[in-house]
Image (cartoon, rainbow, N blue to C red; front, side, top):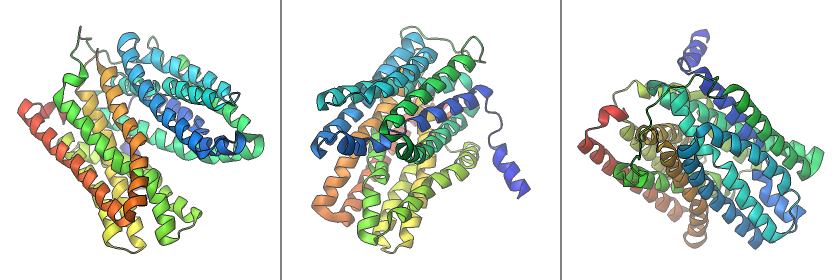
Length: 406
């Protein structure tokens, strides 16, 4: 057991102190956005909005995320990742606190849109920060550590949020969300100030090419959007499937979904370190992850017994562990100082688009064709992502940049 623990902690070796601080700041920030999982309940129960109104608000929630990612990328390339992260965290704190005082439908639509546009400026800036705080050989593991922080934050947030609502009502939730953003922002100001933190300097390229002119990168974005359409069923249609078809209770569904977070926490970092030491290119590894996700939907469709749900969750979790860190790292590796924010903005937007449309596509497919046909269609979407990744691999070989991405 001692050797096993030593081997596990050894996978974190080589990561810079700044990356660890960035992970802590991200953890605080993501745990602090605990109002988001309870937003639909707040809107219907406290503000008496109709389900139709809630649908429009959530659509603007997603649109704000897209605009915020784009704006964050633009600003990162112009004023730097550090200033964008500080502005995003502190302004998000103010926005969360003010949002509780908006009670009209139109006002809340505007408020949610502005809040998400400000909050999601943080994402591309944070990814660019990783390239400055980590060496190239540690970049994928640094991204993996940030992902662990995000997952822990999203896991802790809803649990804490439920307790806060019980003790302090929804108003307390907005206040605590705002305060945690301020805490994260103050930590960033205190510890990761470029004048104090150890930064790996990169030569800035004048007038760098636009990201959308990078054809392999755009192919990667198409592949990741398609992958996201399939993967994000985990957050919407799969829980309904578990309840409708297998009569699982909410507690059992929670445990099954919790298995995803547990597997990521235990296995992702060792898995990434092991895969990094292999001779496989990043694009090939991403392809493997996408195929594992496609297999997860086939398993729950073809096996037809309750154990298949666990097998499917394991396959999907390992697919996620591989796809997200390596696709993120590949996107960042193709950028240069001067357009890194733009690259990371487009990368973030691809998943925001998948979030906006993925849940609706899944729900409508189930309503019109049933679960079995829906899982076959979702599998085909994942396989289409794999086709684009094969195209990407061919393009990268043609460019002869495989040593750069591996």
